[in-house]
Image (tube, rainbow, N blue to C red; front, side, top):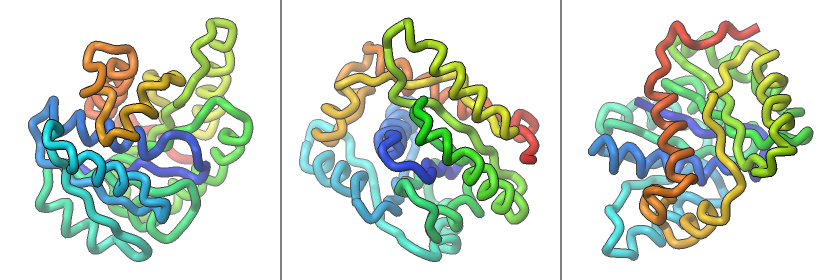
Length: 222
């Protein structure tokens, strides 16, 4: 399975989500995982470097690819159980190329207006790529949610905005927690730092929801 974590808005936690998904599949599914870093900021590559310098953490393979990467991804997908593609927060050639071959596109968005403004453009991109990749599933996931109960409506409103464009929205969300940043800086994951913590439960819920989806669960794009 190839999972693309991407989107047009930076700062929504794409690399963090990609990294934790990779650890989930390696740890909980005993899978052979490859991470593909397509972000010029090299966030995941730096995370891998920190991770592989710690002998207590299981190594995860990672390569960097940019530009016209469709054929490279098709080739790699034959050799790994899971390929997790981390694209940066911008509309570029690598993002569209990855969309054209990915099994599932996951688009993290914070429940903020500037993030939600990117939804129409993402729907347009997904519709275009769906024509060449009809098997593709796509889901928004709301990330970095405020934990205050008074902000619960903001999360629901964000999900409603995404759903209004005919694209699946995961039930699972992530909340703003320091452990996400702390884990990323150390090359670890929340599943390893606090395996019984709330952040780990959030990541497991997202991963399992993605795995449970089938093609007929995907919404028709407008």
